[in-house]
Picture 1 (spheres, helix red, strand yellow):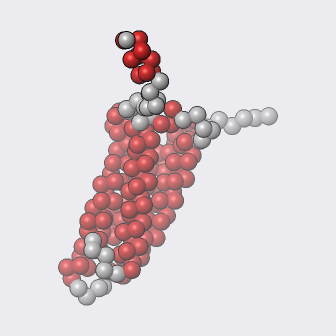
Picture 2: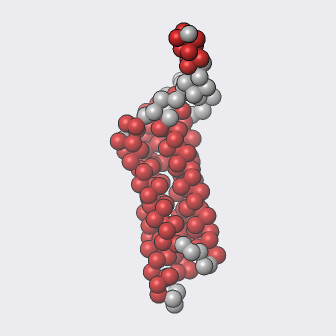
Picture 3: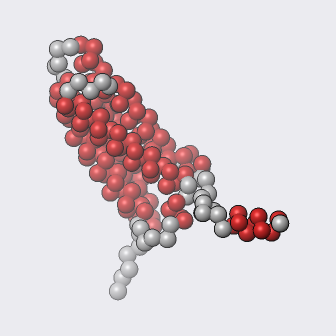
Length: 161
């Protein structure tokens, strides 16, 4: 009976999962935590979205948070090591972080261009602070891209023929 249970456990669908908490003590892991926290703060400060620019800003921030959480789970569950697809993970992450930095920067420009100089003070202050945090979020996406680039350069070898 014990052997049967062990065989069933060994054939578990999720046997590939290995929790990697140590990743979040590294610079890329801390950067991802900061990205999620800044994104949540941007959403809180920009809510409720009363203008189209703020709707766009919120939409982009939500996408950025979701993408960062997905990347966090990839590292937390050690999915990079478990997946046998021929994916260049550091390059994929670097391109993803660059794209997120670009769209967050664009959304932040829209957010700040509308709210700087707006007449309603309470909403104006919250939304300008959200925009400033959006700039910080953009910087942290660029930092994440830089860290992924460093990892890619360390793992990428050029084959000379």
